[in-house]
Amino acid sequence: YTRFVNYLYKQGFDEEAVFLLTETIRISPEIPEAYVTLAAIRAKQNRTKEASKNLAIARDLYTKKGMDEQASQINIFLNR
Image (tube, rainbow, N blue to C red; front, side, top):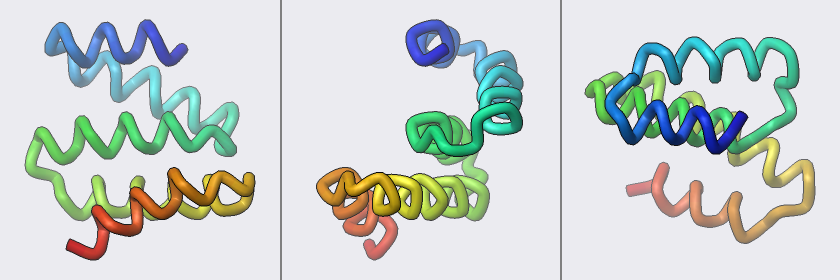
């Protein structure tokens, strides 16, 4: 999913990417990258509360998976 969603996002098909990300999260809620990409789209749309919420979920998933570097990078961003 990641390459296709990123392609849609980069081509400006934000709502199509959001749809696929939402479905991905519904089916496999343990994929942190889906939340990160969704957060990027929501931030681009000035929907900062949604973006922050999705980043926080991604951070927690990265932490749960022992991916501390990724979780730390998100924490730095969230604490700006």
